[in-house]
Amino acid sequence: MSLLRGVDRTVAMLCRWGVILAMLGLFVLLLVAVVGRSVPALAVSGYDEIVELLVVWLTMLGAVALWREGALYRVASLEAALPRPARRALALAQQLIMLGFALALVWWGWIFLVDSMEIAPFLGIDKGWWYAAIPIAGVPMAAYSLAGIWRILRGGADAMSGGGSLIA
Image (cartoon, rainbow, N blue to C red; front, side, top):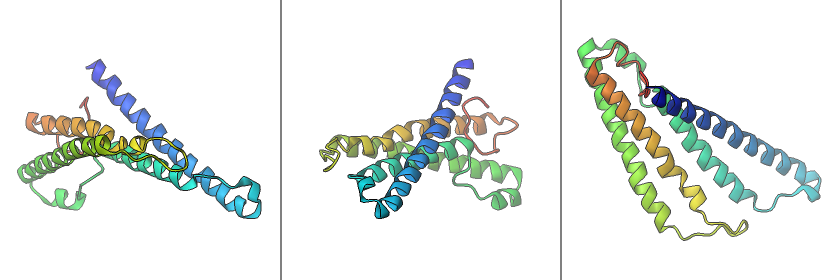
């Protein structure tokens, strides 16, 4: 159990700091672009490629963080209006659909990554660094969905509380 707690904390920390650093990077790039209009010496070459990279990772890491907390694909007012057995069935259906989506991200993201032969024109690096975010994010998403399914089937006290925490 302590191993799962450590993995869960590590995923949370990586997502949190990844999102923070990507947002900070985007903010700095935006600031440099605005100031660069007045001071041409501050112009950033390859700006678009760096923004693309940061946005992809920001989006995927943010999605993992929200997935972990159970904050995606929920309509709390609908859940509250349903009786407990229906809420449980809805929670199970949600987790199964989310698991299918996460597995599709892993499978098709991997195929997309492997088939990609694109090189970023200015930076000159493989765009696989962009595309890797998709299957990498899909793995913890699938793990959290499996944990959520396990909690619902086990019937724990907080089985319908949302997230698929690995330790609940």
